Length: 410
Image (cartoon, rainbow, N blue to C red; front, side, top):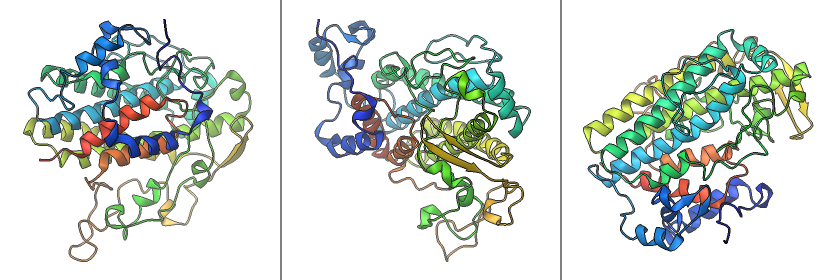
């Protein structure tokens, strides 16, 4: 039997996620839904990653609407599909953080990928000790954040199904078809070392959110740029946020830097989610869909507030990572005299809103511009390095979901 596209996926080195993202955006309108919808039409047509009857799947595709909203408008269904995809992605990397950084079990929600409650891993002692420099309660916070993301993914998927909306793309993300990343999955004590959807061992972390939320005279929605980065070297090269093997835990400076990278990545991701929900909510048509977006979004803000407070406790260290061939330097942000880098300024400073001249400055979430918000979020996640090693098909699926969400109108 001929192997499927998934079994013949190109090696990670063949193209970067940014190149894949660019290619998919360029060809999106020419190849909408290509063969991916066929792959996701029904799990009955799939055995693992092998397509049993591709012709049947493609035939079933013709009966589906691109946007398949069921009882929802196509736009509302697209909005919820995109945020659900984002939550599934978050669930995957938060599970990795939980396995190594907590390992305790007190979950209210099942893992969307397995439908089961996680089993205790015990965590990784050295990694947890380094995370403890940021805050002694990190294991509990990581568990809670992971549980929250599980709940978001499960709820959004269940809600879409209850409305008869097409969820074939999401079923592919939840299932095993794209959970193929093994070379970048941690083998350190505490990890379950299973195939992953995301890669958190080769991150490029943009910490400019730090200056953006501490600036009172610039807003990215109004053209503001050049915001101060909390850790500029995290935005250069690749950095791991989890120990890849137990060898990473034997060097105190290295494991501290890995834990501090995770601390800033937590904040980076959650501030992105905060903006995403606020941006897409402006496109919702149905009041109940608006209620969903406005109810989940602020929990991301609560996560962000927690994580930036903890990340600021990183202690000074400079480390060279011989595997990623990168160097990172963390400075004492509590000792800085620069207001835009000050660790304890965790409340959003008032800044321009809607206009740079018409109104007084206001404390706000930033950015919240709705135009192109979903594609902007996807580009952000791609630049972060989460998808290094993923396939063209995976990137195409996400680009498709983002484009649909950005086309939604009230």
